[in-house]
Length: 94
Image (cartoon, rainbow, N blue to C red; front, top):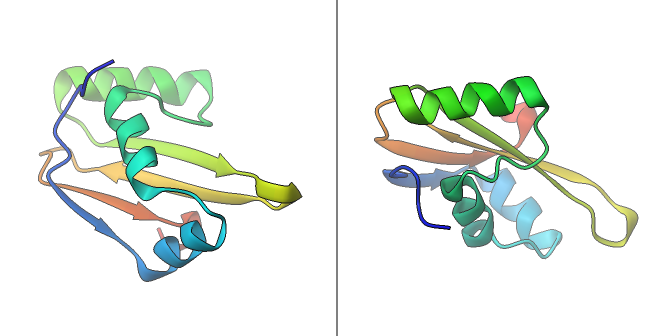
């Protein structure tokens, strides 16, 4: 599946990058999933909102749960409505 929207400038919080590294998760793979429309661990309502956001130029949020060796990490990816930037962050940093 191809990219459904531009990511703009990609930024990430230091904490999100450190956590992804500690969990052995690739920021690039998560960004690719987000851009393809794989919204991760969102409920049906939020998935529908993202589909509307892609079509009408609103903010897009994906949430990914990473579970290596029984540990758990949640990472959010947010693309701004104007598609100028996309940020990887931990939910508590929002």
